[in-house]
Amino acid sequence: METSKLTALTLDELYSKKKTLTGTTIGFGFVMILASAVLIYLSFKSQKSGLLAIIPALLIILIPGLVNLNKINAEIKSRLA
Image 1 (cartoon, rainbow, N blue to C red):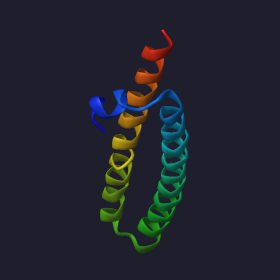
Image 2 (spheres, rainbow, N blue to C red; image 1 turned 135 degrees about the vertical axis):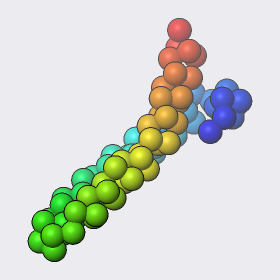
Image 3 (tube, helix red, strand yellow; image 1 turned 45 degrees about the horizontal axis):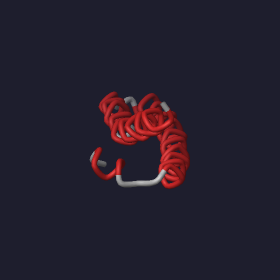
Image 4 (cartoon, one colour; image 1 turned 30 degrees about the horizontal axis):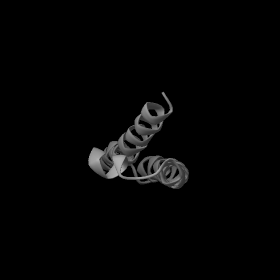
């Protein structure tokens, strides 16, 4: 999301995007935690430690969502100030 796109949105649209993005990020986070638990279990059961390398890659997927959420929060804060 570019900053210019965020500045074109109204405050209500920003709150709506924030609510949607927060829900999706929490949902993805929950799925990532479950997937990490399954990967840890499978790696110990099958004795293949290479499966553990997938866990940091799963966490990297959350970064763009968190960055966009921070941009939206900053835009809302700048408009309220």
